[in-house]
Length: 138
Image 1 (cartoon, helix red, strand yellow):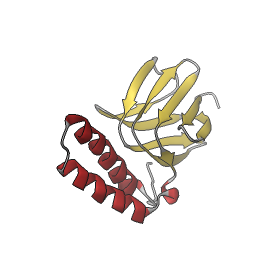
Image 2 (cartoon, helix red, strand yellow; image 1 turned 120 degrees about the horizontal axis):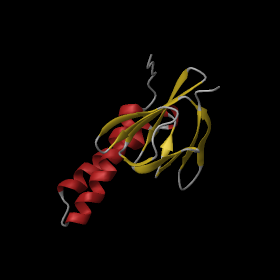
Image 3 (cartoon, one colour; image 1 turned 120 degrees about the vertical axis):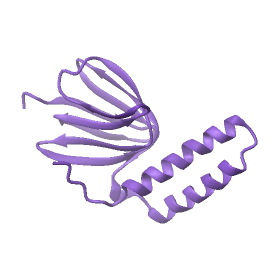
Image 4 (spheres, one colour; image 1 turned 180 degrees about the vertical axis):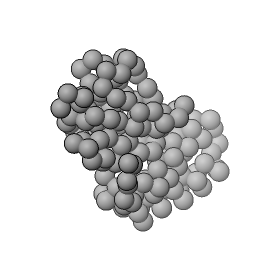
């Protein structure tokens, strides 16, 4: 396909996705972005949420945690602490993690504790929000 570019999604524990896509949408610190072929080079910080990409006209969606991505002439490399397909999310575990992070956030005794628990809460909420739902982006 002439309008595609290479996308690599990596986590510390696995090579989540590798392939040609024609669009990528992700949650950044300053809002939602969509990248198409020949986008200007950039680096962006990811916030916990979902990453959506179109392969052969079909949108795929995954749940991601915080991370960053680099757009270059060679394609996109997206690095996230975690990335999983919605059907891989253990909803009960995500609910427990959300409750625990919210409680720890309330009891945080330092700025660093507060920030860590903020990240954990955002990750749990993203997993719950994007788990096992059907997505039709067209």
